[in-house]
Image (cartoon, rainbow over all chains, first blue to last red; front, top):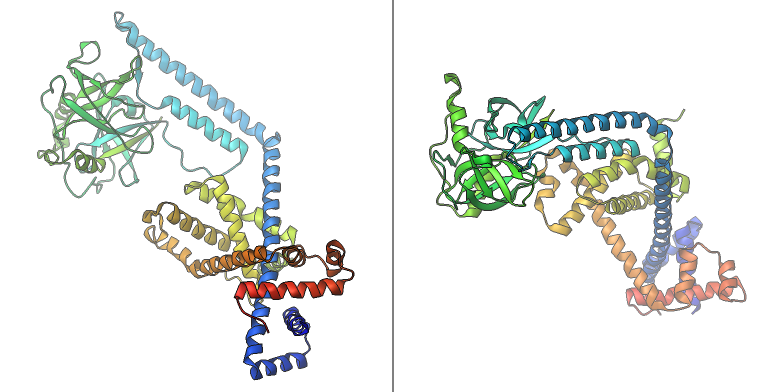
Length: 358
Length: 192
């Protein structure tokens, strides 16, 4: 038993560095002479140092946990102090005021439109993200008030969906998404942003053609794989769409439920197709991969009723352009023999988010 | 005035000694950057806290060795280690190779230079947890006695009175007995 004590004592004083040089030398000699002792001694030393270090680490960890608790408690009380906030409150108040005015103004505009068709009581909710934008705006302001952190670039006030007309950067979308834009950005499949401008628009039919500024831009290596339907498709035609209600591309499917759209508008289709804000401007595809139209609005009274402008309106708009702007529409449909999944996979590269700053 | 390198070195030395004000300062200085980054990269607040504390433990462990010298700033080190830990956790959680820094440009690839340090840390952690298991198997009063001495930093005098030994020397003898048993458990060897 005493030899046990001895070896531990040796290990302890060796570790603490309190040994005299002579003792250390003796210890080394003994280890040379007696390998069994050397092994035992090394084990003792490593066990002791592990014990000491793991003890220290445990202490450090509990200290860290304590500091972390203390800091979060501090932060919580910090957000309740006033001086920093008052400055931002004014900004917030101004922003909220502007937001209020804009939302009232847009209500007024829609009201007017409704009055011009007295017989019609259908309430339309334009499919853009104005309310969402106000929310995010407020959220950002709150964040600024709570803690002054570096914010990521703000999302556009309004966002919609667009899709390629040509591979070199002509894009079709809804006019109401892009109208009155201060600046337009298009986020393509790989996440990159490109600045764009409105090339042409047809307000009555709610169609706009955008062009990406970058001349070298291409959606993909290959040409646009879908074609645009020249004639209107029939009642009951199965359709699907790809749009960006949020950051992610969303697929939904449905069918043509009426040949004419809102108030008998023959340029439009009435669809039974779930759509969410942000999907304005999304392509309406048939099963063979032809673009039949562009999602424009939804009926707020019923869940799945959506209206789309037929691709005819878009073709007319393109034909009306001056000669030098001729857009070469894709002629070959490369989607018609593909399964739905593969069609979507191809489509993804040609569908984009349209971010609008007003 | 202090040379900034000197102050960082001093700060590290104090951190190594487990000095609370130093730890608080380091913690506070680099907490926002790391937490912000992890939240921006798909983590929750508690994930971020977790990772950041782990990174600080790694820094602490590194600072324990005498020849330790940081080749970069404390903040840079903590940030790189935190990033690395977070990538690793993401990898374990969803096995998504897309998140690996190898695919996100050469600049981020440099974070992998700490791969070895994190491996060492992981090995140390598993070593400590084995030790802890052995301590648990040891039973009472040995487990409590060793913990009181090595973790709670109590003196033999204190331990003697708490555990009911007549004097510190008796407590010390008991401690050596416990250590011998622990060594047997941990290394599975017969002591002579």
